[in-house]
Amino acid sequence: MIVSKKHRKPRNIKETHPHASPRETPHPKWLADAIFYEIYPQSFVDSNGDGIGDIPGITLKLDYIKDLGCNAIWLNPCFDSPFKDAGYDVRDYKKVASRYGTNDDLIALFDAAHRRDMHVILDLVPGHTSEEHEWFHRSCKVERNNYSDRYIWTDSWISGGDGLPFIGGESPRNGTYILNFFKCQPALNYGFAHPERSWQKPALGPDAKATCDAMVDVMRFWLSRGADGFRVDMADSLVKKDDEGKPYTIRTWQYMFARIRPAFPEAAFVSEWGRPEESMAAGFDMDFYLDWRWDGVPNGYNMLLRNVDDPLSRKGDKSYFNADSGTPISEFLDEYEPRLREAETADGNFNFITCNHDTARVAPRLSQREIALAYCTLFAMPGVPFLYYGDEIGMRYRALPGKEGGYVRTGSRTPMQWGANDASGALHVSDSAESDTRAGDVTGGSYLPADPSADAPTVAAQQADAESLWHTVRSILHVKGECDALRSGATFHAIERDRVFVFERSTHLQKLIIAVNPSRDCKALQLPDGSYRTIFSIGENEISGTSLRLGLQSFAILEAE
Image 1 (spheres, rainbow, N blue to C red):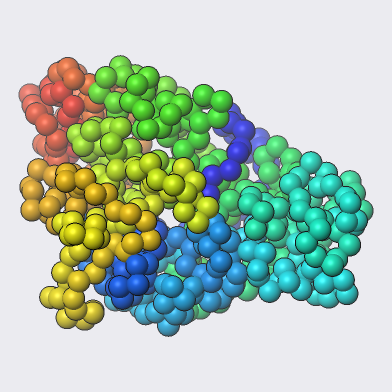
Image 2 (cartoon, rainbow, N blue to C red):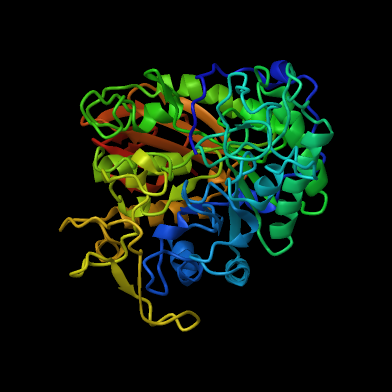
């Protein structure tokens, strides 16, 4: 989830963390070729007709995901929860929520994915639990016990939180407890960087380490049952009042990774952090390029896709892929390249998302052509891409009342649009031909209302239209999967940095030139010396020797021969 963080200028990882411990284990081999598909489970496929998406429904759609070109899944929280924050309020880390199925269903999903050479990572929420978690119930007791210091408690019922949000008056214990986000999410105790009150425990002290060990136990539980890793929610927020650069939180993660990685060297860990100079030092394999915009100041991802204070408005939008913005790519590159180099220095990945469950979808603010150019560019960039469910068909953000703590985010969490609307507004598709799964109709579920518009994009309609966004996304993902120079770690070098963006990706086996023209004008440019052939394109493009003419709103991948 996205919480308020100050916009920070990228720093050199060696200067920020000169004593960061080097990795003792290599990155999982499978990550180099991974292409992730993010699934919000309650909205993807409802296989049993109860109105909520479920894990058997996801298993039913593995072949769809693989055919699209994705070979890995990030599954948003599926654990037992009261769902006051859509599952990011975990009540039991080791139990699948009954509305999604059972632990056996999740293990069956792992097995089915592995048979298809696919991987599944789960969403880990280490910073807080639900107030209904058994750990918290025990921590609330007056009598001292093994869970008394699992959360952060003050030492008096009238004590404030020393600048941190807190709740009092809800337990017999003589103290107030610190929150991480909503009222229902008490903060787990990873300590304070510089304890100043009697109730503030030191980072990596005995109590903080006990919390770390409990979280390692959770990771071990699911990794031993077939999970391939974790995307870690709010990974940078563990230690309270940490210093600039998060040195204590970094050392906390190093402590946990030292205890889990030797037993599971192929497990992948992706951080919701947004500053690879820090997350890579902590020991993560990958870091998301989050959508940041604080006080009107955009980060690079925001510059590309939603450079406007109101993410639903096209008016005043300066994003690069808006055909009418006139924005050069140089502004994005100035912000992006230092972060990319920091990740490369640490032998990690800095990853792009098309969108996610916390971010407004770019449709309908951007057109299908603008979206196609944007996604093709993101998929051709370094790192491991993450495609949010429904983005392959341009599902639209919808202004909806909040659901389960979603608030404005709810409009990006609507049911997957598989087929044509019926009278009830549900979206159906028949999968009776899939003999190894349940036969019959499946739906995206009625967890939230589906898009009722007559022109609502659906998988069925777009699969039948060779010019659709679905076919463009599928084509570029298959090209990515086949090209050595589009692997996560291939080199990146920007050639043109104006309104037209041209960059080179290369390995010792292949060199590619990627060119995008998001404007409504034709552009001509010179390529580096060599001979080229087009292996993928959108719009009109012509090569003559080393001259490339890019038609309006066009994209091309050229291979050096």
